[in-house]
Image (tube, rainbow, N blue to C red; front, side, top):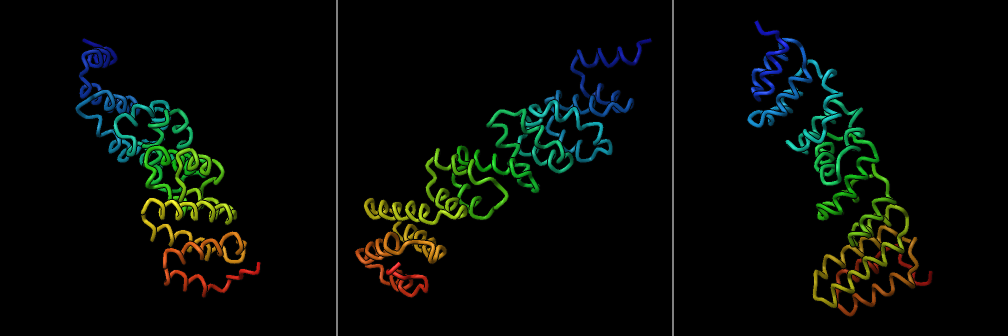
Length: 248
């Protein structure tokens, strides 16, 4: 009669993963059962449901961290959701072993769950600059749980000027932010681009900055530019701004 261990070895060698799974389940070898699911191409998509439903999550933690790339290969976003949902204390450790592209998908999942460490949120926004740049402006505008300096380096690297201006505004460099947005407005005028959107951005920044901007180097050039464009309604808005003082 074959010993049970021999049956497992034979089943594994023959890639009879369902047989292996039954034997591991009977023996309470939960991480080995999870390994069988990962190896079984017909059932590997079930690994995340298995983890979610398992009442033995603590015994799975080490295996998941050590084999995180395999879980990401199945579905990077679901891997991030799963780790952050059930093992948030090892999220950073799991993330650190992944290559950049895999980190992005894993972080997307973690962001869906929320409560990521500041460094992880920072890394996600940096990777967005490369892989999904259209998301970056809304992220830096709406969130404060990231480190400005490394994100600023990334938005400059990928030439995301609106996001750069927002970060400069958040860091208190209103003049730097204004210079970027005013330059974008001038570029839009020269290229017949989206002048209205560029105008709204620079005007909103100017109004948010208030008296922190030097009127001689900001408001006056903007007023002159808008006057040439005959943007009368926008001119009225600026001229009615209580912080406008061209004698500054």
